[in-house]
Length: 503
Image 1 (tube, rainbow, N blue to C red):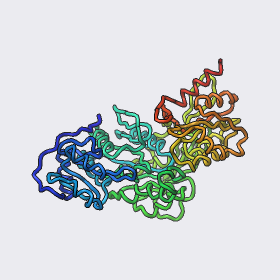
Image 2 (image 1 turned 120 degrees about the vertical axis):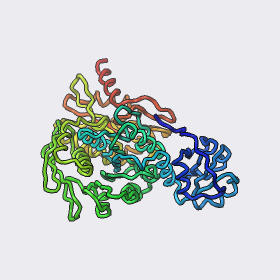
Image 3 (image 1 turned 90 degrees about the vertical axis):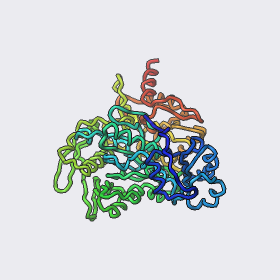
Image 4 (image 1 turned 180 degrees about the horizontal axis):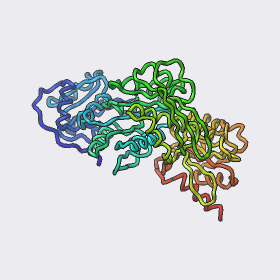
C-alpha cells in the first residue's frame, strides 16, 4: 500500500547550477522521486537536506550526490557549504525552510492539493484520539467515507495499519491521503502532535477544519516551556491559513482561548462561559453523568438538542462538543448529532475490561498529569468504594512531569500502585524515584517495577465495589525496555491477574 519507491523521473534539459523552487515543483509533478535519507537516494533523484540539531541534512549532501542525486534542496544559509561539493551536473535549489519545502514537494508528487477531500486536523494535549473517533463516527453516520490518521491506527474502509507515530512523517501523510482518495474517501480526520507541527510534518496540506482541545503540561523535554509548547500548537491555526478554514477552539482552556480572536472563522466550544467574544459558540451543559454515560444538552445559534452518550465523564463531554463543532463546520445539523447516542467508545480510552468476576477495571491512555486528574475525577465521582490507580512514567521523556503525575494520582486515588510504563533506556527504579515524591499524602502506596506484577497487586487489593484504573498505555500492546520492544497489553495483564486469584 505504501509507495516509497516511486516511478522513475522524466528527463529534463536544464542548466546546471541553481534552480527556482517552482521549477523543481514542476519536475516533481512529472514523477521525480524526493528523498530525505541520503542512503536511499538513487540515480537522478532529489535529496532534501532536512533541518536538525544533532544530525543535519546538509552534512549528508555529499553522500546523496555520491549515490546519484541530480537535485539538491538546501537551506539558504548553507550556500558556502554546498557549493564546494555540488558537481557540475547537480542542480541546487535554495529555500528558506527545507522541512516546509519538503511538504510542498510531497504535495506536488502525490497531487494532494488536487484531491477533493475535507481535511480535519486535531491538536491539543489530551482528547485528540477520542475526538477523532467521535468525528469519524459522526461523519460516517452522515454518509461520508472517512479516513483517520491517529495514535491508534491509520485507517479507512477496507484498510487499517497500526500507527507508529500519532502524526506520521510528511511524505507518508501525503501518500496515505493519495491512497485514501483512490479508495473514494471524502473526509479525513488527522491527529496532529506538537512535534509534527514544530517539524512541519503537515506541510503542504490545506486543512478545512482545525481543532484544539486543550493545553496542559507535556513534552517540555522537547519544547522547553509551556509558551513554546503553545506556540507549536498554535501553528495549526496561524501558519496554515487555508481560505475559509474553520477553527474549533475550546473556550474553557486559557491557552486555547488566546486563539479565538486570531481566527476569523471560529466556533468556540465549552461547558463554561464563552465570554464576550463575537465568535459563534457551541455551549454544553451536563444534565446527568453516571457510570452508564452522559446526558449532554447542547446549544448553537438559538437551537438546542440533547446527546445521550454511553461515554462517561466531563472530559468526554468536551470531546463530544468538539466533535459536534467539527460536524457543524462541515454542514451537519443538530439532528445529525443524535447519531452520537450509539457511539460505543474508543480502545484504551477509559475502556472497561470485561470479566466474569464482575470487577470494575478500566484501561486508559492517560500519561500526563492533567489526563490522570480528568480520568480519576471521572471514576471518583461514580458510586465506587475505592479508587486504585496503577501508573508509571515513560523513560527518556520529560522528567519534570514525573512528580506531577504522582501528585495527580495522590490527589484522587485511595491506593496508588507505582510501576513502569515504557522505561526505554532508563532504569525503572530511577523513574519511580522521580515520581515517588508526588505520592506524598496518598493513603496507601504499593510499588513494583514489573508492570504485570503491579497489576496483579492492584487486582488482589480490590474489593467487589472498588474500581481499578490502569493508566498510561491504553490501547498499546507493547512495552519498551532498553532497546527491546516486548508484547504487553494492560487488558491482557488484567485477565492474567484475575487468573492468579484462583491459584
